[in-house]
Length: 370
Image (cartoon, rainbow, N blue to C red; front, side, top):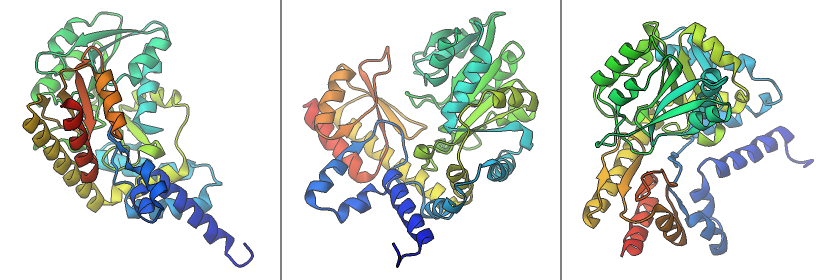
């Protein structure tokens, strides 16, 4: 250690740790011994992550921030809030930065579910907010998806009562990957938000390829009772760093901000700032996602397996066999796929990944399905 600059050593060590955690496994494995390579042959296609991130620019930003890791992140957070506000076209007091969008979902579940509040949501959909609210004594009305595997907005509207505090819409939906008709969604929000707050989870918004598809942030700008959540976990490749944000009217944002518990850290904040600047990586991620989805579609077509065209970084397909059995069989082939999503136990969710992971999945699925 005497002949090595300590600060540079810390940065190098930190970069190595970040590289291992955030997607550099393949590069590390190439220089490893054969016995060390084997664990990295697992195709992790179960959590809708971006295996290409963070970008090189983001990794450099993380490394260059280690000297500030001894400081609380409040000053750095101000800069990120300003960037998000500019990106979304809102004022700074509309922005609530959270530890991943999941913390934002739970903060909303606490804000509107505590004390016996009632929530309405599709079924199946992403459960983080709903289960957290139920733990606090809330009642969740779960409305089955329609025949197109989409939110049944008409039935959801009929469930609204004087006790309803929040309506949760995950769009595009997880796990189905479906996207609501934009006109129907806007009409629904405008017709219902005087009775309950509408929460639009837009974790997968960046993967939508339909031209001019609106974010519900436009309703926040219009002063509606709407909350929008977004994340750096997906297209930006920062799932392991846990950073996301909410956009809401200032009075709603204050209530939500008061119930944020973990907050974020300075490394994640600086990573998020650089991610917003790195347009090349953003475009790269979108294109790679399309490439992987097309491979999945072709695989399912070849095997005659029904699937839903996706507006996300995963595809939901019908297996015709219990998902628990398929999960176990695929794991034996070093492929991890999505967990069960009741009541759709004969459907499976597969995340997109690097093409070598897609090919490993395709070979394993054909073997397992016979």
